[in-house]
Image 1 (cartoon, helix red, strand yellow):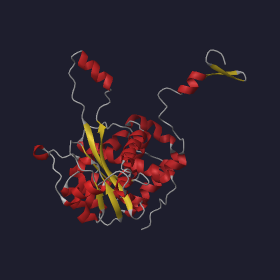
Image 2 (cartoon, rainbow, N blue to C red):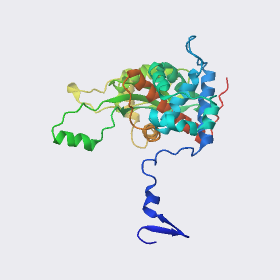
Image 3 (cartoon, one colour):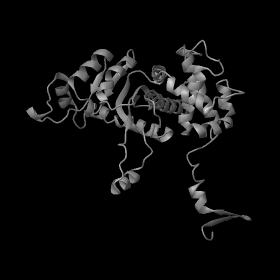
Length: 335
């Protein structure tokens, strides 16, 4: 090896390029596992068939692309982490994926998908996410947490330099997401996305509606959800135990520690106890947040509020499909 090059017969391979890879394409593994992407689409189509998602939303539709096909393509775009322009160029390379959803000759342009994303009802996407409860075992342990997706591609260094030179920029906003996941398999079974800033505890009533009827053993939440009303709401509607650490008491100046379940947490949530061991599984939902942002991107570039919600839910669906298909779960749902 001379000058950073590796000799392979008569050919010389630059070792630096071999380590670095093709610049700009390191996160775009096209046709890496085509059969896995096909299973993504088959899984989504099967779930939407069970949920009876309408094939065509309007009678006046031109009936070229179905409602379900466009939802699958939106999720697939998030899985590839591509812009609309790049996705439109790369889509013909995935013929097996297009065939799996019934697109053999034509495929929608970027403008068609963009308009559909602006008009798609987020409740449909939330119902599809909720259908992944079928992959959770009985007496499961669920964790709840919130995260944020940046609405800018502005780096921290760029913001610092703008501040140094006195250049005024818009404050960095983000899209709020609240997720409920199974700690054993990292599958998200309830998701809510808001384009506005909201406290994590405000999503609890909506999550409760999604989780009604599930066989849940315990739910673990962090101190941000601490409150006697949260304990009462989850225990009465879901019939499960809740484990939430109590915030430090400040007497009359701030937080108090009143309440039956909050005092129970003070007594039972101690190092070495069974409750503490269960609560130690809460970081699995943090791991789920990291996996979603790693596989689908940590930012949402959309102007419309509804588009921001749909993009966030598409990221969650792309993550769920990846987990189910890569672990060979029983992804053919039974009606």
